[in-house]
Length: 316
Image (cartoon, rainbow, N blue to C red; front, side, top):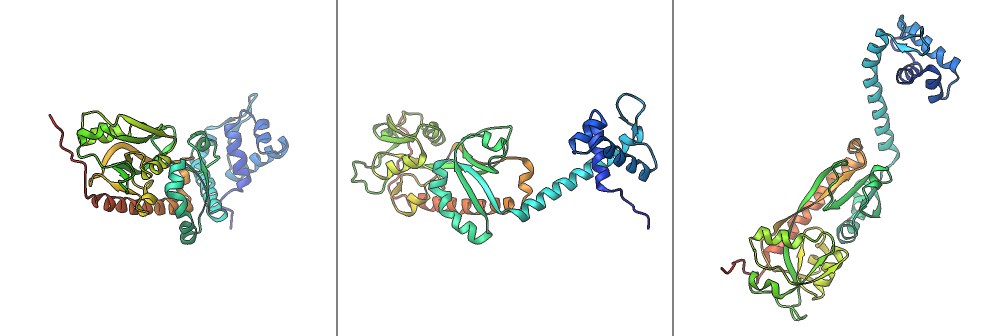
């Protein structure tokens, strides 16, 4: 039976020649001698029964038949390339390279990685940082960042951040919960150097237009700020996930039963759009969302246990 499809080596030579300025440049690109490259093109033209290139000028140009053939097979060859890449990635590696913030890693993710390995046999190579260039260069596969916007990167939301004010569980450590929002300005707060807008976002959400806490101690990371608050240093705005360990250990007490949005979120960023098609990435994302949703439910339950809430009424 007559062969229905030409050899892939000839197809490769044709596609490279169609994009290159000359046969010589195309031959160099795939490391063939000019004569060997020409033989591949000629074998394809013989197989198809038509000329694909006009060789009458200084450089070879696609004929009308060549342009039509290129437009039809180029997408199919790209599909073969992508399918091959994805299969190789799925079968060769179940290691994902992830970069995130110190607080997200230490406060939430690291403790869950052994379970991820047991459940899905996925290993995470974890690094700390906030430089988008790590994604663009391909140094990492994924990033999880809060308060980061980069429209040039493919990303999707992990969670919208809500917050409740909290303080040390042991009030005798120089701190008692303020009786009302009007007295909030009398209390010391703990916050991070960046982002700095959490308190403003929460006060706007609750409708408080009075002064925020006037004495604020700033820390490099959210994790350090929570550690300070749990030790009695002041009030902190507590968000889901990052507060997991402090909640589970009973070191922070909520001062309001209803979490409110603060205009921030955690997003998942991808080194390239098609990386989401890799099976380990899809599995990791599903696992990550499930774990995050579980933490949000625990956070809501903790906040609902508030026994001496700050009164939300505002004096005129």
